[in-house]
Image (cartoon, rainbow, N blue to C red; front, side, top):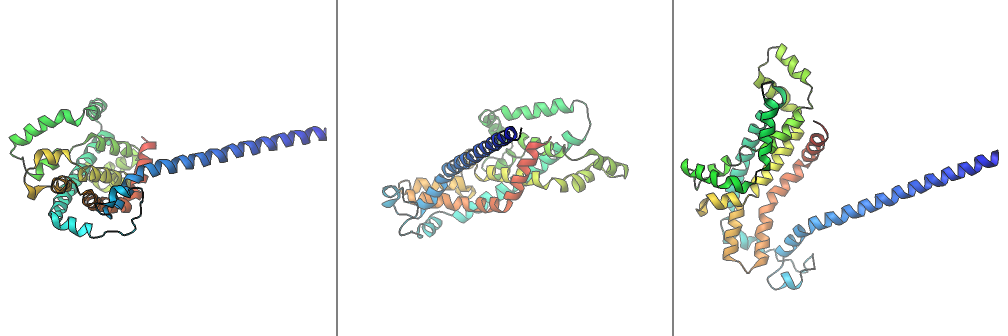
Length: 293
């Protein structure tokens, strides 16, 4: 009997070791795949920064050398002085910040209505609104342009802000998060005499920092990197944003790819800094909004 138990214990032990070994191999395989995918995703950015520190002769001849032997830091002052980059920065910052603030405010108000207020047809209206995400931007581009032209907003930053001010994705993201906040909180506030706006402003928004941070980053990135709308609505150089400014710079220095890489790197520095400071809210907001609601 003891011999049989010993054999069974050995079999169980061997099976446990086998399972542990398979888990370890799967973990190693997962990490290797994640590292490879991360390298593929990061490599274009690394190559861009590396190219910005080379000269015209070595950017392609020595393209596989990520760390230049003699970094040419003069590319950045040369780019900065060739076109009014400071003005492009200011225009882009103004449009991106105002667009982000407006989008977050309109999305939060709409999401609160869809999540916390009871009114006839709420779910159907929300479904129809979210369904507009399926419409490609190219379909609405011409009607938006005609509308802005009739409003006399062509060649203004106001047009860039208005066309991006209302976005169903922001409403969907915040509504899903607002649904995770217990209704008892807002019900108690109503009993105490709070208005709906005060409940929204003093209770719901302070509890939704993670989701709001995520929406801020998404909207800021989208507005900062927008190329199509500035190309359509802006024609004066004094109104150019960074993306159009880089296009203008490329027309002047089309063959100098090292300078174009330097200009592109300059355009990304602010957005990378914002992401580094806000990544905590970004990750937290994505995880909580994706798992609940």
